Picture 1 (tube, rainbow, N blue to C red):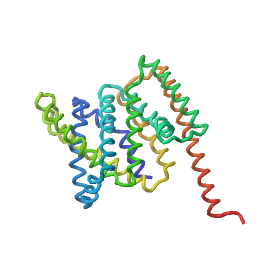
Picture 2: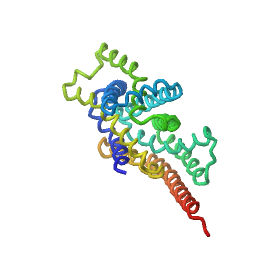
Picture 3: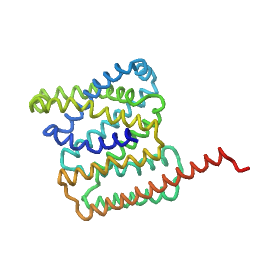
Picture 4: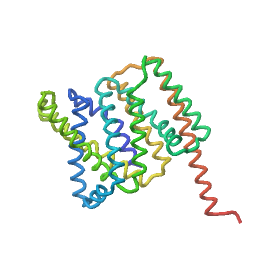
Length: 299
């Protein structure tokens, strides 16, 4: 439980880290995040003596292909999220992670051909109403939130399919290996054009950017440790820690404004999430009772 809470709290406070990295932009932050994460993962793999596991993942075409796709999706997610935070739109980034559970439900319907239960249908319908309300409030589609929700929903779907074959550190290592060449090129181009802040903002800024490797990898390791030990219902409830903290940071620290229309839109989203949570808890309870009945049949 502590590992899970730690992971989502760290993710929820991530906007504060991006804020202190300014004037670095989204591309520079993500490029550094990829490069230094790869070095940190190499250190972790060396300490845990997991090079054989990494080599096996690289040789398995299905695993490598899935992780390469996951790398592309998480790059889109990181760039969009960092752009939103560094341009004063942290409230909308939190909205993306509120919407994410609804996207996961839709993926279950359209990709896995799952049947929705009544409360899930109600939550999805209310979610569409919320997007409509927020579109009217923003004067356009909340594209940052929708991009974050869809990219992370697809990322989670891909990782779930390959999850049993690789652990969190191996998975992150492969993903950063795929992205590292592009990230290195971006850092070189930024440096050559005079737009890099890595060495121009002092030693403190330099080491804060280098620390992005640790800040990226640690919550993922925490999440992996909790996911192996906790029921999926508990993980599903813990995931709300991150957008709640992001939302509070945006309002209380960054001083972003919320119009009455946006409060209404967020309220509709929270209603949809409440229905999803009630459905999840009800399903978990029914499954638990069914398992008990199977283990202790009457008579």
